Length: 306
Image (cartoon, rainbow, N blue to C red; front, side, top):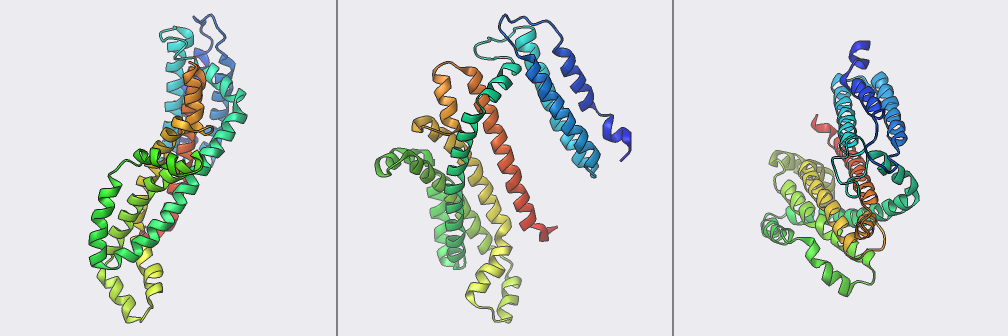
């Protein structure tokens, strides 16, 4: 790519526009902490320049620049609507600088709550995925059992796992174990359904070729059927991951004493919407990072498809 294509992009003009917006007089009487927006924008712009210098694929650079452009555009609109023109109620919609200031001030609490939420997600999700994949392989390898189990999985999977929270609270010793239980149910059924669907739709030619080589049942399941079923398995895993985040946040808002859902609920009850926005932003970042990592794993395991 030429220097013009790498560095002469809309994203850099939006960066300059964001800095110029900070120079406008504030309509709010309270501190807006505009300097935090400037430092954030400078950090993002430095990262953008580094990526522009290192990335090789034009489509990848365009995608990254478009995402950063959206962030700059959002911050410009947010700043104008709050600090500069006071179009929104300050108690509900604080300026971005105040949110960044609060984010830095609460970083220890936020890290603690992130670790709590991610720990619950990983524990429930990994247990459910492992159990569902193994059971799905066993059930799906039998056409009769697979057909029956598919309908059972669809029926039980249609029940929102959050309705099991009252039973979990009554039966399990801690709210953390209740949360893990809910995440387990949210993940188990879609992964089980996806695994059975993948197993039952493996190309018969692939199975016949394996039988000609006299492979044993264990090798057939885990070296032939499992790799061929991975596309369908990942569809179920993606569904389970998406639902798990929603349910975890909902569960933490009900009775947890830690986690990102608890952080949002706790401060929103006191009318602290600055911290509420901080929690929403952090949840979004965590979900994006985990989803990005998951997609990388998926692409690596399915690299044979390309």
